[in-house]
Image 1 (cartoon, rainbow, N blue to C red):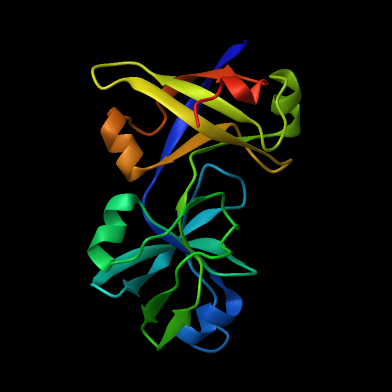
Image 2 (image 1 turned 30 degrees about the vertical axis):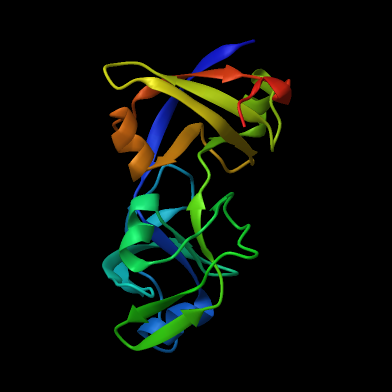
Length: 200
C-alpha cells in the first residue's frame, strides 16, 4: 500500500452552464467573463453569478465556472440543499441521470433544469503520468488522511485521470469545514487497488 502527498482544494457551491443556458440567462451571443483560473488547467471562475431557485428557497450569487459545457450542472454541499429544498445524489461530475432539477435566474431570463443538481463525490484529479506512478487508474478509489485536531479519514475518494488534470483532491465546503481543512493543505493519500478494503 503506497502513500503519497496531495494538495486539497475546497469547492464552494457553483454551476456549469451550457452555451444555450448562458444565452438564455444573459442574452444572445453572451460570452462568460473570466475572473480567475482554477487549479485544473483550462477551468476558471467567472465574474457572472446566478440565483438558484428551489421548492423552499433561493441561493443568490452562485458562481459560474467556465468554459461552457455540453450540459448544465449544479454542484452543491449538503447544507445548501436544506435551504432550497432539493435532495440531490452524491455523484461524479457529469453523471446527472435521475438527479433533481432546479430553476436558474439570470439578469436576462429564467431557465428550468429538469435534472442536473448533484453533490459532487470527493475526487482526486491526476494525470496519466501520476496514475502510472502511483499504480492507479480512472475509477479507482483511494483514502486520504487528515491530520490535526479535527483530523480523520476521507474514504471513497474517486480517482479521475485525464491528460489535462493536475494533482489535486477536491472536497466540498461541508467536508472542508468538518475536517478543518484549508486550500492547499497536503493530505496523505493511500493507494488501495483492492476495492474490498475501502469502506462503502
